[in-house]
Length: 269
Image (cartoon, rainbow, N blue to C red; front, side, top):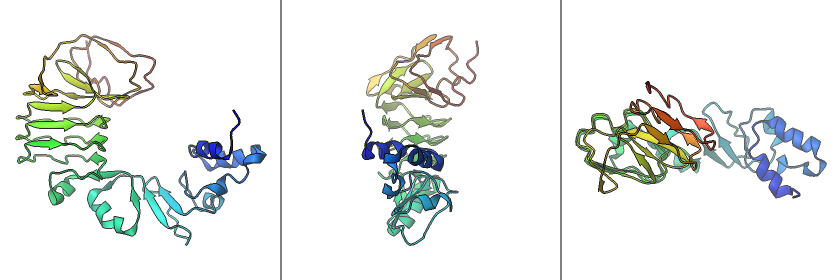
C-alpha cells in the first residue's frame, strides 16, 4: 500500500516531537510540505517549533504549562487539560473548545446535583457528604469518578454507572449506608467483595455494605478464589483488585498491555 498525502498527515498527527515531523520531510521528498498542511498544532509548541507550522488557525493547548501563541493568526483555542465547569462557563463565550470539563465540589455546590452533559469527569469529593442525595444518574460522557466522590452520601439509595466510566477513585462509595441498588452498564463480574465492569478497561469498585440489587436483580455475592480476565480486556484500572482478600489465583491474558496503580494492593496469601 502506497501512502498518500492524506494518509501521511493522519499518521503524523500522532508524532510526539517536532523532530519526527522534520525527519519525515527530510527523509521522504514527496512528503515535503506536510507540516504546512496543518491548520492546528498536533503537538505542544515553543517559540522555535511554532515557526514550522505557519498555517495554524486553531491552537491546541494540551497542558497547563504549554506556551500559548496569540500572533494574529490564531482564531480559536482547543483546551485538553481538565478545567472546572465554572471555568468552562466563564470562558466559553470566547469561542474556545474545552475537551475535559470536570465537575468539582465547588461546581456542585453552585449548580446543583444534576451533572451537566458537557462534563467528562467528577472531581475529588464532588458529592462528598451530600446528605440530600437519594439517587443519581451519571451521564454517558463521564469517564472518571474521582476519589471519595460520593463518600458520606448516607441517603444515596441508587446510582447508574455508564460504560464510559474507565476510572473510579478509592473510597468512592465509602459510608453510603443506604446504597442498595446499582445499575452498571457493561457489567463483567460480581464477586463477594468487588464489582468488575467495563471494556476494554477492567475497573472495579468495592461492593457497598448494604448493596442488594445490581441491574434490577438480586445479587449473589460469590467468594471466588480464581479469576479469569476476559481476553477482550486490554488494561486493568487503578486499584482493580486492591484488597481483594479472597483472590488466590488469577489468569492475565496476553491482551493486557497495562496494569494500573495499586492494582493488587493488599492481596496477600
